[in-house]
Length: 213
Image 1 (spheres, one colour):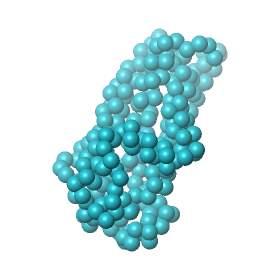
Image 2 (cartoon, helix red, strand yellow; image 1 turned 45 degrees about the horizontal axis):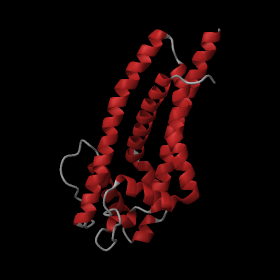
Image 3 (cartoon, helix red, strand yellow; image 1 turned 135 degrees about the vertical axis):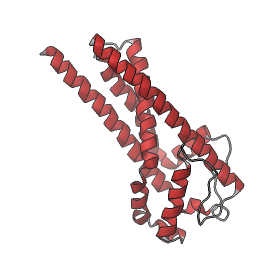
Image 4 (spheres, helix red, strand yellow; image 1 turned 180 degrees about the horizontal axis):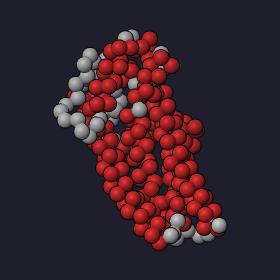
């Protein structure tokens, strides 16, 4: 592989932001993963809350985290403390940011693809496929070594308070959101990003072979 051009590296960063943001959005909205984990992780038995109530409250939480949802979070059956509600406001703000990043980078990446196609310059694709993997690879390695520590570090980076440390007696929602579910969500996100990287790589290989012919 030739030394990548500076512009290709910058494009790779854009594709990284786009694919990771898209992956976060897909992961948050892939409710089937949580529905599966309700039974797989015995969430109903461990929390003492029925499956139907768990689903209703989880759906309310995911609906609230959509940037298109207007209003305050109201869990149908579970009480919430002021600190707990503030944490979910912070979470919603983070998810909304990912939507903005995805939208902006989609436009930029689309423009770049059209421009590079006109120039018949596809070197950015291979560089981007590698760049896209870097952050997920680091997250995967850190999680394999110690997921609990990685989980804590993540919260300390993204949140400026300790409201994420829920007390089950005041915020019983935490009993239906076990750490293992977040691990599964991370695996889904990393898999999504890996597939995005693989697609860029395969397109790069295909175009390179076509140029040789």
